[in-house]
Length: 89
Length: 494
Image (cartoon, chains in turn yellow, blue):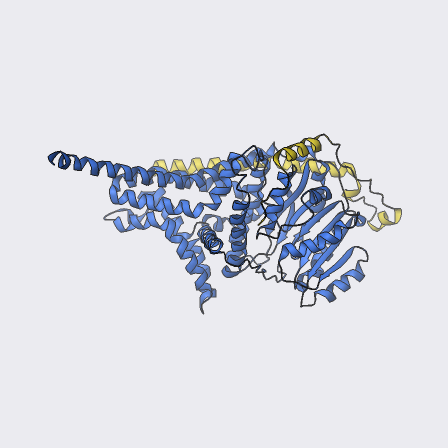
């Protein structure tokens, strides 16, 4: 069975630092021909529109705020349980 | 002589006090998994602010999708068609199906798909199969890495279904050069979810959608989902260009290697993937035994890592170590808690009752908090499986918890209840051998009807603990590492 180490600790830290200083990865812009666009009913797909992609990411980021509602619900249920127990006991 | 006799009662008293102390420590040890679970679930809401979204970019690399397949003819056409329909630039997506010497119609199905999608669907056949998923993936990896075209590689299973926007939601994280791999949210996707598949539905909700958000926050990922892992080419090359074949947990090894090589692993909760899961206890047992044995092997392989931040700030951190061992040692914690409570009861029943009474509300409140939080991360699934969430520890344990939390409400609280008390204290560990019996029950003549009832009584959680115990035993005995393929029928609902 392998030891599980792929690099030593210092090398891994150096890799992490090196990666952090690199520029972001970019892909070439998507170009749709008039025929391809027509085949899609004239509607630009999300993946062909960088602004739509950015909007999608922002919507997902904001959607994560629903976790606060989950936390509030979980706390409320625990408090309710404790209250009922206290009343019964 | 008289002095010795006079001192004897004190010695007995000291011995008793020592035993009481030991039993209290045992009960305290049992609280560690509960507190670890609570700590993890308290991290989940932090994902609202501490996530990777601000570091993403509109990155759409050339993606090679690697699909290992052994006798998957029943599901391959639908899977490939769905991949071809993903909302992703068509010229940047290729599918490579590695046929592991299938004996069914897989070659013919793949030939047809190759004709329908020329240049975009590639059939790679291994003439010698049956060595396991990792060997199959490595065959495909060698072919794909030999060509410069691939910039990112998606490893998936033949039966899973990706939501149409899921791939681009995963690739956006790879814009950040510090990210080596991304995983998605896998959901149990059976159209006719019932019994065990509903339990698995809740289990995935807790282990994927909830727990992996906490791991994003903590900065250390335990495991990339086997059916949804996207790697950069750079990362694959950095970890050797091959998947580990020495353990049963190749996905976890890949995850650890990625992070130990200095790259991040990110969970994307909004990239959704449906998977078909076992519909029977025996099939589930074989699948989870493989995972549990893999985790035991990983614990040994990475023994230099645990609780050593100098090796890796996330994986070697205190939080991750406690989280890892809390799951791995859960059966031991349950055993020690039971021994502690029964021991205290035999020495001092009032003290045992006080400890149990004082302690019971913490796990009950934690349990309620965790299931409410879990359901809230994906209410659509959560509201379908809330009954299985409540009965996750089993109907018997549920009744015990209700009885312990609200003693005046239960009819068995009055009168001489020593038998009941001993049952309550020992059920925590007795449910584990009962889970073994439920598996045996399924294999009997009436098992198909009775086993689901047994599962609801004993619980899915104890079943997982029993599988972990089986993993300890098989690993200790050095049992053969077999790859039991989960039967797929294509019942996943898109």
